[in-house]
Image (cartoon, rainbow, N blue to C red; front, side, top):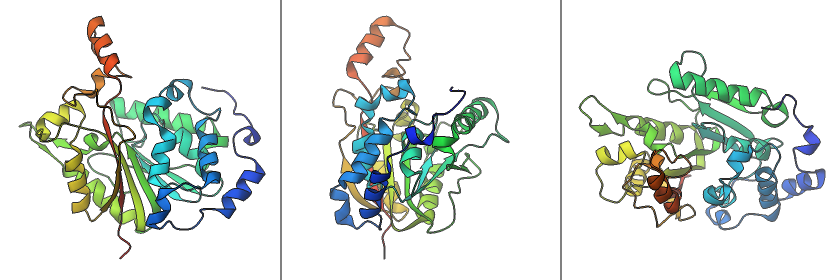
Length: 295
């Protein structure tokens, strides 16, 4: 972790680019607007993705996670109020924070340090330290407590333009003592997202795909969910599926093995197995854009 942060001049787009932002795309999006990203917005995203604030190990995953194409697909704009749910170590925070710094707002819905224990506490503390260590990038980021199972609130009604979550949908499932898996927390999250979004607002979801027809009780231990199930649950909460994308699809993934066996984790201790899983590559992921109906 850096002991001192580079100046804002080294972190953010130049004044001409900020003027271009003001000239394009700073109004509410219509459905047709998602088809193309204005050039100035694309350049701003590229600047954030290629910026010096990125962790080198995170940046190595760009060819697999395709952050530019994913955020363009969601229709993000620099003046939006965006909520990222369960940011983990901040892979996407490093991109969203500088992109939204000047004109927008970034809220990170994450477990609080206070009141948590074990791995959750250590993770929350590391994330909080990450943000505090670099105020030039993260000084405008606001943390919103979001903790399973008791507190899944995301904010005031009709207050956000976009809610995004990356590879967390399986974490919002619940397994009881009888090893029965239900979407109890997922349903609460989706209702919270619907509640906080403005009419016309976007829910952007990336998740690990399970083979169609696989029972949830088998998908859950693999950190996967069937795409059709996620769509069904979101629509049941009131969302409309606006589009799907194959940006993060991987046909080599058989979708019936635990995600943590695949890169970047490669959890299997056998050298032969690790070579096998490395050849498969990253998990086959669904990328979904939902909209809260304007009517």
